Amino acid sequence: MIGEKGFWNRLRVRLLFTGPTLFAFLTVMIIPFIYGIYLTFTSWDGISVAHPLVGFKNYGSVFADSEFWSSFGLTLKYVLFTVVLTNVLAFLLAYALTKSVKGQNVFRAGFFMPNLVGGIVLGFIWQFIFNNVLVYLGQKASIGIFSASWLADPDKAFWTLVIVTIWQYAGYMMVIYVAGLTGVPADIQEAASIDGANSWQKLIRMTIPMMVPSFIVCLFLSLQRGFMVYDLNLTLTKGGPFGSTQLVSMHVYQKAFLSRDYGVGQAEAFVLFLLVAVITLLQVYFSKKMEVEA
Image (tube, rainbow, N blue to C red):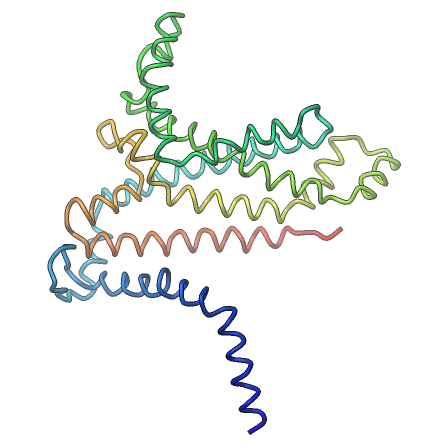
């Protein structure tokens, strides 16, 4: 009886503190996720009340949908360039701004600012820049590469997505790298200097290995955002010209809501979730093996 009374007391205390958060997590994340998996086995059109079951037919349609895999391949290319370039630029900015640069706090705030702007607003701003500002400057200064809008060129439109993404996220990743760099023990750096190590040797052999946790976090966030990007894709290029910049999230949205093929669209979303989960888990697993302790 004493044990039962203690158990209920502990349960009440835990529900008091975690109950609201647990309720929100279940209703916003878990239940919709499970319901979404159920819809992958139906031919629901997104409007009707009936949910006719079709078994695994929607998953067969996913593997037969060449446009889905084409957009997924384009997304892989987009993720590769944005993850690498964003993190390289972010690390260089963080490294420079932790070297007693005058006004470094102002620079840090300035580089972080683009992350505060939503993807929708950001896309419209850069659409105006690529369609008008750069074209005007290119024609006035006779700069051939800017004489026509990049958004109208199937080969260049992809790079507008990459450029804007790097511009938006480099400052956010920089903050994480700054925290990692300031966490490297100063006594180890001093000991290396006494032993005759130069700045390059300390960076490669000491600083970078000790910042592996920061790299893990930044790469994970970059991968997740790269695969899930939709708002910037919609407002900047709308998947054009001629579908040359249609990333996989936009394809899934169009399949589910514009084509009213919600079952197939939901199945494509679930397959995308599994692929992204596998890629990010592998990234975290192999990155953790590279961690070192001071």
